Length: 59
Image 1 (tube, rainbow, N blue to C red):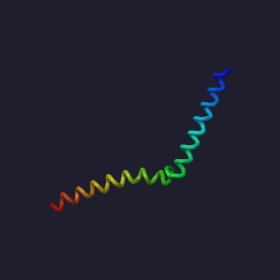
Image 2: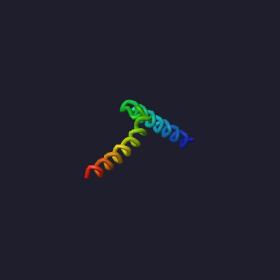
Image 3: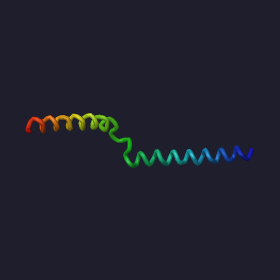
């Protein structure tokens, strides 16, 4: 029975930690503009490849 109380306390501490991390992520804007980050990766590759093409043609 004592072990049950320990497990309940441990689960409540774990739950409080998860809630804290969730609200920290919201406050630090981790979930803002999720789709744009994915597109920026594609645009960066396109920009770098275009830049290398223009450098090669100028030489």
